Length: 128
Image 1 (cartoon, rainbow, N blue to C red):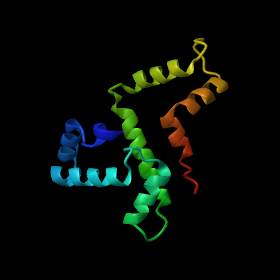
Image 2 (image 1 turned 180 degrees about the horizontal axis):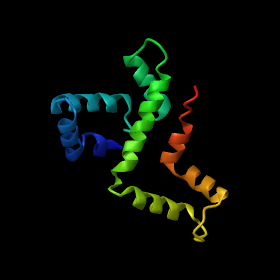
Image 3 (image 1 turned 135 degrees about the vertical axis):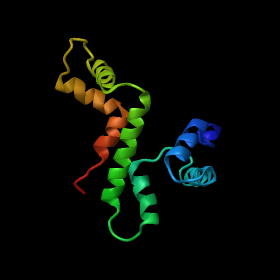
């Protein structure tokens, strides 16, 4: 994603500084390291697990990594500024392909397969 992801957005950096115990310099350094390990700026579950294992090599880190990954996805989904009801309405409208105010199982499956956030959540097999 090139130069658009080469720096943390100022509002993201400010939020992290205010809500964590890390300094601006530490966060910038960690983000630079993240981009080195993941140049696209996008990290899938398997890559996240591999990075987590590097930091915590003892024991099975996969369950915690899956939980953390799901949590990050859910946090990103909540950044749209919508209320829970508005979010449900938006998702419902997107899934109701024939606009009959009902979602069939087939409409649900097709909408779920076309939404990257849902696909990622469904790929997190918590039973492993």
